[in-house]
Amino acid sequence: MNETIGYVFIILGLTFDFLGCLGLVRLPDLYNRLQASTKCVTFGTCGIMFGIFFLHGFTACGIKALLCAIFLLLTAPVSAHAIARAAHLRGFKLWEKSVCDKYADDQKTM
Amino acid sequence: MKILRWIIGFILFAGLLILNLTIKIPMFLRIINPLLLSCFLCLYRIIKGPTPADRVVGIDILGILIIGFCALFASFTKMNFFIDIGIAWALQSFISTIALAKFLEGRSFDE
Image 1 (cartoon, chains in turn blue, red):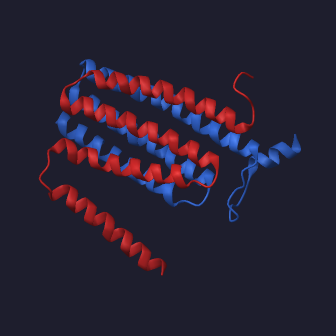
Image 2 (spheres, one colour):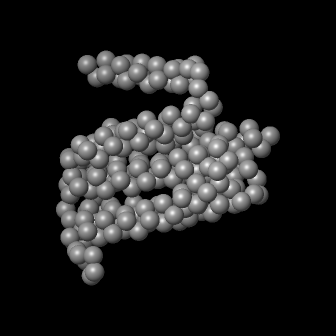
Image 3 (cartoon, rainbow over the protein chains, first blue to last red):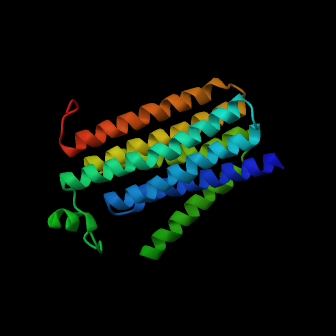
């Protein structure tokens, strides 16, 4: 039973990884690419880690995989937010069909 | 013309999936192959990216994919030290991404 749950998590993680990288190639803009490719961290690689934890149980390998998953869940959104803020402050343009830009409006009013 | 491109891409990926499921290789390589294809897509974005920020995003995602690769390798070959390499790679990937974001903003490293 645990092996079945583990393989289901690993295959879901691989699917999310592949779709995230496809979005990294196909989408038109820096911010859209960042939004698509952060999904590939939070469910792709963390799904693989949870799958390995279900496969191995409470051994050394499983505990380390769970630790790595928690660390990735804490740090990956921080780094994505840092890249987006730095790119916006440097002045990289949005896509011309983008609808709204709240961050520029906030900077105007402040 | 757009429908034709969608059909060609769908046939290409379905062919790769069927080839991955039917060729005679071990189970471990069958799980590794989609990660390798994802790494090649990331390398395409790193080489071709129009702005430097795209390259930074590509490097970040490539590091994350390699962490998953290390974890799968440790799980399927019973060599447990590879997952330690994955944890260390996660730490260094976070630090390097923060440093590259600061450099991208236009400031220097010791500020």
